[in-house]
Length: 111
Length: 114
Image: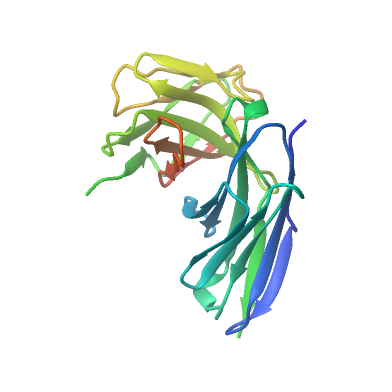
């Protein structure tokens, strides 16, 4: 069956770098998404990976290794507003190409 | 301004009552989705629609119903058959047609059943 794992919570310091990992087990992988969700609000799209490698977008980068079933989201120059949950979602053939979501990683930024 | 709207933001209902949550989009997206979010769990798909007048059950469709009579609208009814309806409900839409097909979310409706 499908399974997506992320750490439940992480803490980092303002100005630092943090890496949030996501591992998945699916059949017929068709893309991986990262979303940011502030408490009580809607998720907002951050990045999409379908090929192996690193996608960089400003302070945020996302990496994918399909052979390892592994992705990470890298956040640089952390700001207090980056305190949020980060959701990993995978699209695959065995979910009829609908997104399967991890439970999210709550990131706490300290001054 | 293009976007997805959900109303109301907070909704309270008595146990045993049906309730309908609205979702409207003016992004001209073909596909629309309903998710449920509970603390400590990932988003779970309730229903989705890839085209007008057609929709499919997601992983947790029992106790819910939907309609897609217009491209812009995808209302969700939470029926009295849903055993644990208190949750945060999120509607999303995407252009459809494969490829990246990124989903964009409305602000959500927090439903509390008393």
